[in-house]
Structure formats: structure tokens, C-alpha cells
Image (cartoon, rainbow, N blue to C red):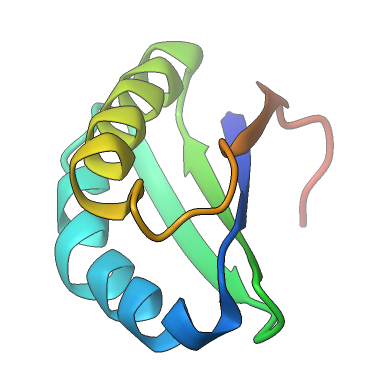
Length: 95
């Protein structure tokens, strides 16, 4: 399995709108990526958020990176205060 963590920064006043867009718009998109296993979004409530995506292989993870970049560029870029940070790699342990 392969995972991607994306770390976002935004104005805390935009939290509810970002949460809604991710839940209603982006999650259905990323679920269509090849090898999709799971997606989680967390919002600190203090202007930071992170997503954790799991895929069966790197090909699916790479597809999700493209999907996320396109979605962020089109729908979230005006709400973000800096470019998202991305960490990705194979999952080495899980329960």
C-alpha cells in the first residue's frame, strides 16, 4: 500500500467552506482513483488541515496527486495561504 499526506494552510475563517468542499466535491473525485483504499481529512480549526490518502499502489497514489493538484488549483487556491506540502511513500506498518 502507498500513502500520501497533504498539509494545507488557510485562514481559520475559511475552515467550514474548505471542509464542505473537500467532503462534498473532492472526496467523490479521489475515490475514483485506481486502487483507492481510504481518505481522511482533518482540520485543526486553527488554519491548518491535512489529508491522508491510502492506495493499493504507487500508480493510484500518483493519480490522486494529479487529481488533488487540479482540484486545489481550480477550487481551493484562493482560500489557501501557501502551497500544500506533500509527503508520500509506501506504508511500512499498519494494523
